[in-house]
Image (cartoon, rainbow, N blue to C red; front, top):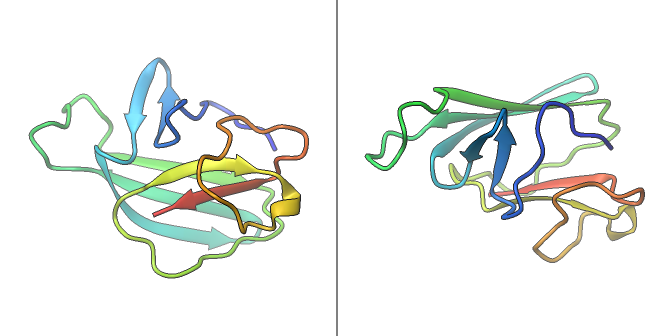
Length: 113
């Protein structure tokens, strides 16, 4: 699995985009998951809190292309708890604290809400 255009931040709750820290846990509200063919997109909207910098984008989307399988367990809340990579042998049944970068055996990407 490869990430294009951005890396996950070391704290598992954000991405870094063009030098900007995009905190998806504190500064964005999760909106929806859209699945089409082999693509799954996760969409967020910038929060309205006074702590949120107006320079952050109004909306943020992570699109994953080439998805063989995706599963939603339960109903996502509006707050991301963690995003991380896990090895295939975990079958998605994992503890917290995934890796922020994929390894050769890390082909499961989990978003926890």
